[in-house]
Length: 77
Picture 1: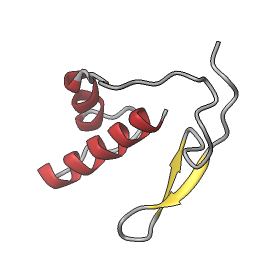
Picture 2 (picture 1 turned 180 degrees about the vertical axis):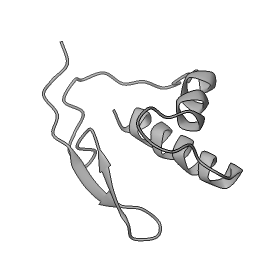
Picture 3 (picture 1 turned 90 degrees about the vertical axis):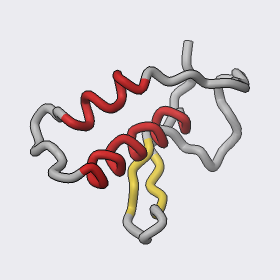
Picture 4 (picture 1 turned 90 degrees about the horizontal axis):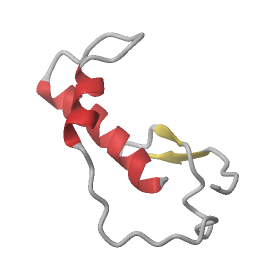
């Protein structure tokens, strides 16, 4: 079972706050170390280009930013 994790808010490179689903400032509560994470990019890019409940990105740059935000959350988990 996963340990309880609290949401963290940190600034991005522009100083805008980003909410992360995990507290990355504390030690890993689950005690699991992952050396080589493998990400299914189709499972990341598709929801970023066709989001539910919000407008799709208009440019490739906006799409990349959404994908990078999502990957950042996944890696921080």
